[in-house]
Image 1 (cartoon, rainbow, N blue to C red):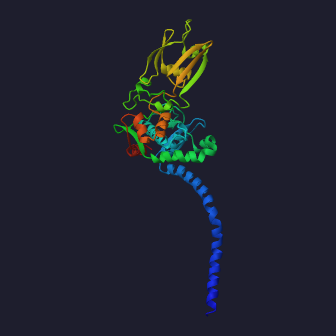
Image 2 (cartoon, helix red, strand yellow):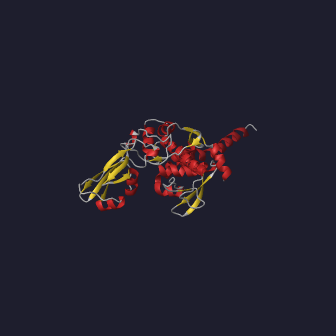
Length: 339
């Protein structure tokens, strides 16, 4: 028996080593492989988990496909933020955009507005409401950057889940646009309705951004046809007769005809209603400042604030005066009852 004990001990040690050696050989490589796989899995789970947390669906008319898709609310917000704001913007700017996008759609659904949508749809996926793209479309656009961009946008949406912007305990009209001319616009100076939270504020962060300045050239004939005007023979294009609080063109006179800055912008498809022009030979050269209607949150301004260390709560408080970040629960309950 005494002679057997050393043999048994030695056999046990060898057995344990046989079991351990494959594990020791694999361990140095496990973290590298599983780390990458875990990251990819996490990205997918983040995108999918936002769907599970959505209490309602949004019926979205997909214009290119000519179909209506029922998309879970939070998945819809992810698709809107990914489509409306560059994913490489600061996370706090993306959170502010998520709040605006969620507030926009909830207010729209509560109002039951169906103007401009096919029967059975709540909204379109175009600028008529909010631009929305699904994951397959985003993969085609983002290509190799898809995983990290989707994870970043999804993270911003999840960080604000269940939250909307309210004024007097009601969801606001959370309008937003790309780039200001240095100031935002009072709502009634571009649209008809006056909202106390859509006031003109300074937005200096936009000035050195890619979309701040744009110059286009139109033939004199094209300019006249689109605006329904006839230029005079004195070499001048027209006279700006009034500007808005946000320093955009309010009204302009062209050889006796009065037009609003918004009319000129829309008819000539200009980036902004803050424009100036010059007659050069057979062309009218027009320079615009900013990109978009100018009402509400400037997206490039939001990113500029985030780069300075401002939080999403600071951003929305700057661009939407007197608003609060509130719970969407009571409004979701109403919509759930409808669905």
